[in-house]
Length: 80
Image (tube, rainbow, N blue to C red):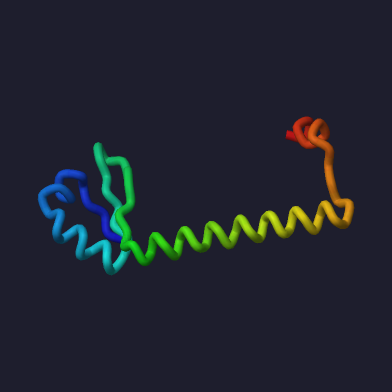
């Protein structure tokens, strides 16, 4: 993954957009990685994966409830 400083990204915005179409680009500010610029296609795929994961979690939780594998709230909080 390519990394640019915020100033470089600002100066070369067109190049940043072209680079982000190929792979995500990290933008750093004050020597800290701050944001990632990515193509819309990559973003949509990431969002779809998050939705799929949430569906999996809900389906798994529903199976646990249906089979009686549950923990009451107080026990859960106490275990933390």
